[in-house]
Picture (cartoon, helix red, strand yellow):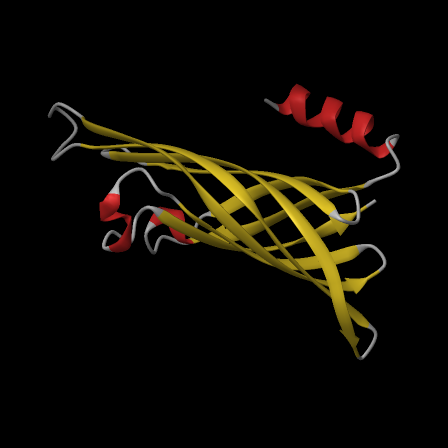
Length: 160
């Protein structure tokens, strides 16, 4: 995984696009404060984004991976901070397991969701960004009721 990220960073930077690398917090861990890895490619009007988050204890683990593609446009600037918004599609894969104690059998659940994705970003300097991203997974009609199928994250990072 680490090798893939390094290869992507160096190959994307030569494609006349900005590489985004950062961290953030995500709703996907259901209230647990777990930092996420955030990697993206910003081509101005398009953004490709990948994020990964995971936590593990003796009785619980949760891993989540999200890939999103956005078409975005700038819509203004306030105090020199460029604002951009985007709409696209996202994919989410999550796997979590829980056991009552160390000797109990794991109860494993997986999720795979595809759905619309939204992005709002602020370029707080030439080399730094903050973004709010959400994806709403649609795999059946219950998506209107279930909150786990949507995921939102706040990310902070550098771009080069």
